[in-house]
Length: 214
Ligand code: ADP
Image 1 (cartoon, helix red, strand yellow):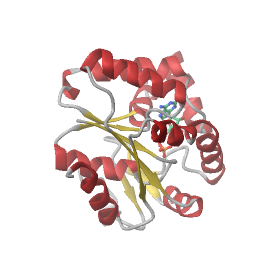
Image 2: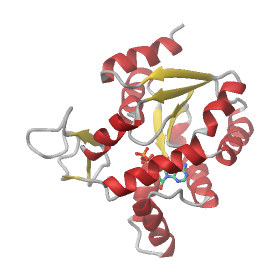
Image 3: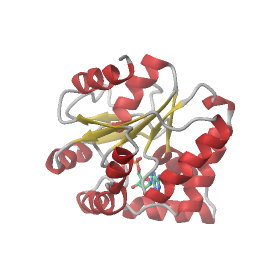
């Protein structure tokens, strides 16, 4: 099963990916997490990625695709995957099609587009905290643990370096410019399902589930 979650930063792709993972027993492939992990390495590539992340710019095509291909080829994803944060450009989208068809003999059946108003997005991103150790994310308004520690691994929770008001504005611009064209791209292919993401997490999840249980 290949599920693609599309939407602006902060619309809740990560939260929905977590719920889908439990429901359908498939792994999540988040390019954001792959890149944050890679950025921890103290080498030239790590530094280059860190700078892109901090500024809210897209990481160069070749870098993201190389990391993605490495992940797709690992055994971990043999039952399928949920794509979170990839593709972000039409160039990445056609590359993904090529990779999936070549390696798995199939394309994407459904692309879920989570639609949320920009004002709500900004609020959500600024109240997001992530675990320094395992990357799980929490929201101060929703599910922040009373202990202030990650409920999964006990790690410290902190703000992501790109979750600042200035960078959020920029990331939304990048989305509008580079990623939003994918909405039409997938609509034309007949695989896009648009879901109102401006609701309770479980209500959004029920809508997504109904797409796959028809
Ligand atoms: P969000 O959805 O909140 O933006 P992500 O974790 O998906 O969070 O992405 C964080 C950052 O990682 C992006 O702003 C961008 O710099 C980089 N990134 C993630 N996915 C990609 C991608 N497919 N192509 C290029 N850069 C990416």
